[in-house]
Structures are given as structure tokens and as C-alpha cells.
Length: 116
Image (tube, rainbow, N blue to C red; front, side, top):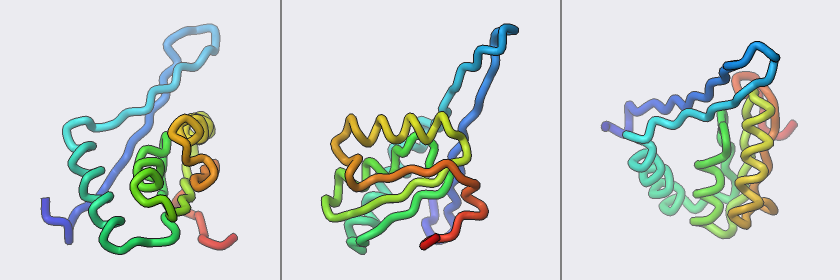
């Protein structure tokens, strides 16, 4: 993968398998590339040592949480349209001990503006 031309697409999908309006939520991760992608992102974060990270289309918060675990001074903001994914990200951050430095918001990542 050429890092200069790499693009990252993270997908989440929902399904409603039952006719009684109960909804099952599935967070889909491409396991074939997830580990390599995480290693590359963490490598960049270690090199540049940012204070803040904004993860657009954050899903369940995987990259923000990994980054916060890797760099104890890092503060992360995740933006995801899917409210269930945002709630899952908050629980994941709590379980990994980084909830004080990782915040997740339900919003349209395509329209998100830093500092609002």
C-alpha cells in the first residue's frame, strides 16, 4: 500500500432481521486490512506526537482508543452519524481506560467543523 495515495473507508451497516421492528446493529471491520491500517496510523501518531486527533466516521472508536492508549497525552474526538456506534465507542473508551481523553459525537462527519 502506498501511503501517499492510501484512502481509508470504514463501514458500519445495520440490519433489521425481524419483522417486529427490533434492530440489530453490526459494526463491520475489514479484518484483512484492519491490523495493518492500525499499525500505520499508530506509527504516524508516534512520529508526530499530536495533542489532538479527530477521527471522522469513527464507528465504534477503534482508532481513537488505540491511539489514546499508545500516546497518553493525546485527546481524541470521534464523529459518527450512527448513534448506536457512538454509544458503543463511549463504552469501549470506558472499558479501555481512556474515556477521559476520548469523546464521541453523533454528527455528520462530512459536515463536521473543528472548534464548533
